[in-house]
Image (cartoon, rainbow, N blue to C red; front, top):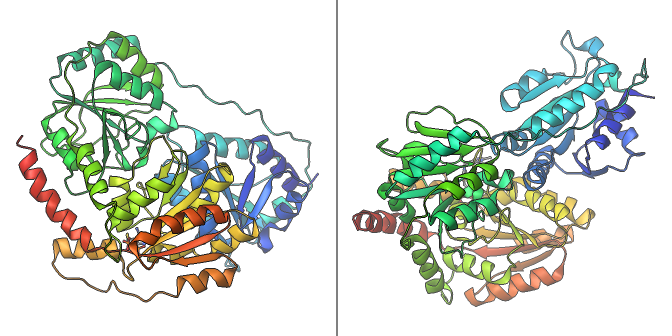
Length: 548
Ligand SMILES: Cc1ncc(C[n+]2csc(CCOP(=O)(O)OP(=O)(O)O)c2C)c(N)n1
């Protein structure tokens, strides 16, 4: 048996269904071994697309998404999508070909030290130096990537090792998933005491709740104790937006209505919260609250995140145990944020202005999608609107990258979402700039018959950057560009293309796009004059409201 064949067997043993990537000269044996495997290889048009697909696959399934590239330029192209997964805590395993070990000690065509390149953006980065270690390397790569907090593993596979005959017989290693400990009783009691003494507790839920599949326990906890829940961008849907205890989403760098809830609170219960998502200096400026940290891992150190107490272990077990003992609070929570957003959306639901306001686009989108359909947001001003206003009713139905927050995730992300959940609609909401960063992958989707919808918010600008420039410095700098004709662009690939020319056309176009069941690109002009209006309104309203 060749080492490459054993390598593929080890991937099968890990339950790998798909590998996203581009073959090269230095992984001929690996690609050949794949022909005899049940693993499906999705050939992409850019390695970054492959890495983003693996990223979103990992985020939705909790199992490592796998991407593959050749050495040198192929591997460097993986870096952005891989780093995105690593910092968004999505399990990912990247595999790169490498020159033969006999030429790595000197200047050599396309050879880069990839292990060191991936070191700072991964949990584990290694080279397969001998065929015998393949089962250990693959098991460790998947174990590390999938273990809390999940992230990236990188495997560099030199071509002479991949092509070598196994010197001894080796088998894939048994896959064991580690279980999380139940938090100790003493700590539970401590949390109960802090919550019982609180006058105005509030819950902030992060992506760890989704990873730990603890949404149900979180909702029970909130209901039992009558404490309201704000979720981060990456935890949208942990509590249904329609739930009376949902405060909606926090994470806008500027103050939002929910910020008032934080200001008023004396105890903040952070559940599955990760600092990369929403820095504590924004929501805990005066360091005057008691923080309870409930997560699978200990808290990061930060002067604005000094804990009253921490509860480490299985999140559901911890929440259930506290809910049993703590005293339920009385009183109905005044959910100003949800009411304001619901009003804002319904206020714009019949807006006829054109270009279309962000609130109206989101209202129409929500109206045509089922509760379980999946929206992947790209990164830009549209993401801020989606995070703030899109009403997610269950976890993982609105995917937002907010750790690394890289543009370009939208199209490849939607492809991965559709592969994972073929029965649901997969749609990306993207800016025109983010779309063009990985638009080539619409060919990948068409070739593999993966139906996705791309809703482009077209403003011919780097909209979010204009927003920041205007807010801070009062004038825009170098943010404009021209777009291709997106309808013709779509059609040139064999996809469907629609241009929204009137506000009232958006909903029927979206409905048609779902019915088309192929790759559909929708060019939707957006009115981003709403961005600065939102900034002004938030500073005006929050300064008044927080005094209530
Ligand atoms: C790969 C990458 N490059 C640059 C940025 C910084 N950045 C964040 S949003 C943005 C503009 C996005 O423009 P567009 O995709 O058109 O979306 P819009 O803001 O207009 O909604 C830029 C340049 C980033 N996050 N990721």
